[in-house]
Image 1 (cartoon, rainbow, N blue to C red):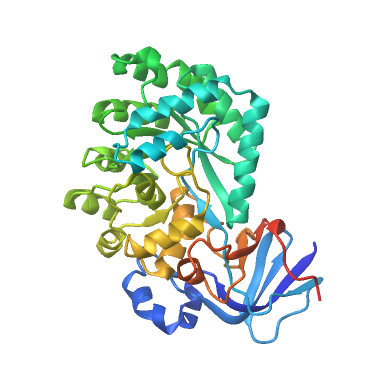
Image 2: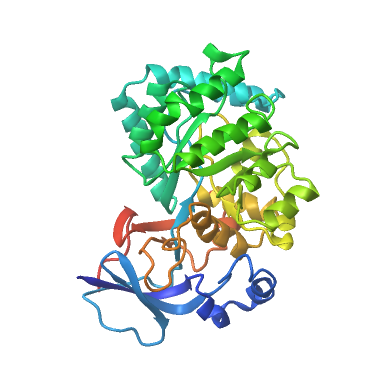
Length: 413
């Protein structure tokens, strides 16, 4: 198998606890204080090299690099694990910019806007949806994202939800059945009847096409009992539970997620002390989506409170047409540091290792030997430039499983 060595790496972020002694001095105190929930935080090497053997990381180190078939000198640029975007809604058609403009003029954000996207998606052909999806995946790769979860939820019908999952499955191994996104127009006024569809014929059609199941547990969508019914049915069908939780206000979402041992509770904008304690005492990841709070003018989630309590935190884009129309993880990092009170190291960890934990993967999100060679080469000496230079194109090249999928890097030496 062909080996490639990247040399001249200014800062190599590995998340390898064995390299914790190489963490920057600025990160040491944070590394010690969050070692339980963010192992390997700040760990990495300066003036480093990394060997890729086929699709996996073979070795990392500093000092004199070993021999390899191909050698690429990065000239002092940083390398980080590829971002793991564990919450997206990338299969859709239509435009909701007017809704966004209205929000900026003072209108409230409400879950019902999703039905606008449902109508546009229903009239789009498979070819159109595939073209739009591929464009969004390309944009996410350019932003350094190497793994992405994609949800259904913009159909509200048995055949429509299955169609969205089939399309999502063409570009990711992490597909989530979100039939319980909102109550579609044909079932308004009888949510329990729609839950019977979601847990019955729709689940039967969608379970073979999905790895997870999700529910929007929120006022205006699905209440506690309805959410539990959806998640328990999905788990019985072999799907991993996830929950849209506590986005628009305090509610039962986090408690529901912990009760069903969900992989993640996503949004977590409005949390009580009991919610924080429940997350800290469980394996459920708190996945924060600050680009959504930016777009909807909601309060930002308090990541500092979660991390200090011992909860595992992830960051994701929530790329969707209504409340977070972005695939820029760099933008998410900037918001997480400035407004959610994470350090840069914590934000990078949450967008890589945290996302991997949300997807229950241990072979991505880090660059320890044996990991899949998913990584981003930065046109910067370190990852702080995502926050230091917000909105700038910091990612120079994105590599998935050892293959360049976006950007470029220097010619082999």
